[in-house]
Image (cartoon, rainbow, N blue to C red; front, top):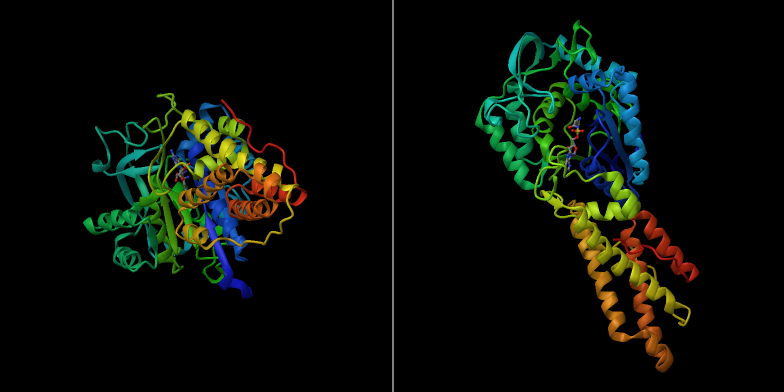
Length: 472
Ligand code: MSP
């Protein structure tokens, strides 16, 4: 057992379905994970940031078939699209777990065998309405006119022999964990939502195997079934740390300190996943942080509506740090946030080209005229408070107040005039400006690592290139 277990900080992001290219929603969660990881690394925490791909299941099987590809070849291609996007977004993850990794598959089979041996998994029959988009059985009450509201598709009625996982016997334990915040669900409204769901009725045992899906991990005790894709995927949070499926060898980074998820996958993450862990006698994650959705023009992004904002287009237009800034600054992280390309362009010009870019170039232009000394500022307590509460948008607002305040200060003080008329006052003004700019660069480190480095470098050498050219 490593000695630094106390100092560890384990952050997970969902393993995304690799049935298509990654989109802005995936980027949103993963950038948030990276910001938090960078913040805790700076605090000398032993951080582990997990990223990965969910590669099995009916949805992928179907898509691969449609494209005439072997499923493995298909997921290889799209997994690669995700890792290359993470590179473009400067995501520093510690592992990228793929659920087709042999070590993962073996671990899943070990877990299945153990739970089957204990009677927690048993053979039965399952009947329900299946949404392939969600890869979930739906309750009648979740549907609108028989359609899945998230995917707007008709759910198929499935009735087949299946292996089931006992749920209800852990329900009270789970409720107690959530109520006591031992398994903390944030923001509060999502905790309330889950508690009211859990208290409403007895949970039905869930189907953890599929007879008609070929593309999955075979059950070790019945090879005519494959493992339900969510059961498989959840365990990646442990196998991503190298876990081999043995209760005795739980990786020292576990339990996760923060698991990032979007609100669309809260219910499964706050029922099936913790109940699997309770059955296995493994600690629950400490915190589940749920963020809202990015909407486009007030609506869910959809190819049919034609309002999808492409992450590639964002990167091309705003660059890596511009994109990270616009995603994290889009709005309250736990709420739905509406974005449009027009408004993001405006924000880029206002906050980055005019706001920060302008401040940097003005201060640097004047710097050679001054003899000031600057003192080092450490991570501001306010930013730490915001990031401890996972409020990246508020942290950015706070930093940009300082940016705006300094730009205003320059306009009021007119240092270029002071340089000629009042050298003492000029040095004083430049001292404040440079100190604040140094502070801003340090605070930006987690959000915009390259920009932060460029500003620090510019201060050191006394000149700068344009950071954010205006765009149209
Ligand atoms: N494979 C499952 C997750 C398994 S985790 C054990 C899955 N994959 S997914 O590809 O559909 O990604 C879902 C995640 O993408 C959501 O949790 C959320 O993080 C993100 N988003 C998808 N669309 C989104 C928006 N429009 N806005 C913000 N995030 C959204 O579900």
